[in-house]
Every structure is written in structure tokens, then in C-alpha cells.
Image (cartoon, rainbow, N blue to C red; front, top):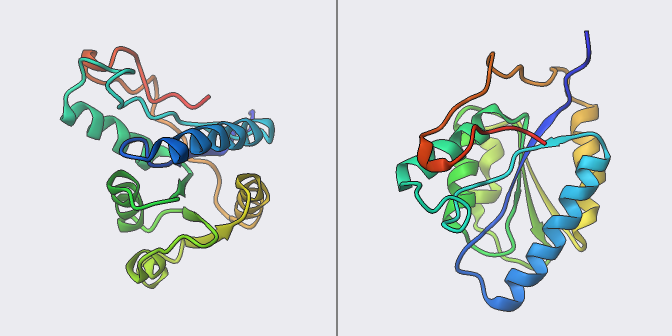
Length: 172
């Protein structure tokens, strides 16, 4: 039997960012995803932006996003600024006492509420970084010490309303 790869859902703010931050975050996030895939991890991709799924309803987007959060082995939440979506994904995963790493660039202020999740979720970690690729060994170490294995996905593919335009979530 082939060993299943660990599945990561990398989360980040996608809308409402200043242009300079948006461009640098896009670049850094691409670097991080390429590095994680190079380590053999499977990644879920968010498809809720209007350009990606123009016919999706708000309910479709939420259902898809939370399905990714639920079936991933790790929510890797990158938070360079306040973001409703990222906070919601963290809360959803933490309510299930599942694995979350909240990664924040050094110098960014994060509320005590966000930093305090370990009081309710022992599988929550808060890390600060100077460069996005510092997160690769953090993720590697996270999985190295876990005693469980990757979640087994349901038989077949999860389907979403036709407005989402494809059968997802699929980790790549």
C-alpha cells in the first residue's frame, strides 16, 4: 500500500490588500507553495475568487473553503495583515482541535485572541518569520513529530455545485 502524502491548505488574505503587499504576498506565496510541493506535500488551492469561479455563490465559496479546511492535515495560515477569511478558517479548524500553524511576518501585530488558541487547541502553533521560506522547515518538523497519519479522503471526489466549475477539492 502506498503511503498517502500529507495534505496542506495554505491560507492567506486574498482581497482588500494594498497593491504593494498584494504583489509581494503573491510572489512569496508562490515560492512557498513550490517549496512545499518540492518536499512532497499535497496542497489544496482556494477557488473562491470571482475571477476563478464567476458563477459561484457566497454559499458555494464557503462550502468549498471549509471542505478544504476540514480535509487537510494542516491549515498553514499566513497572516501579514488582518483577514476575515483566514481568521474564519483558523477558528473552524481550531474548533475541531485539528492542526493549525498561524505564521506571521515578524513585526506584524496579532491579537492576543489569535495567539491564544492553544488554550483550546493543543494542535495550534503560532510562529513568526522573516522570510516565507523559513516556514518550510517549520512544516517539515510539524509533520515529523505527529503520531497520526494523513487523513484518508472520502471515496471518489468531493463535488461542489456546478457554479464552482470543477470537481474539487483536489490536492496537487
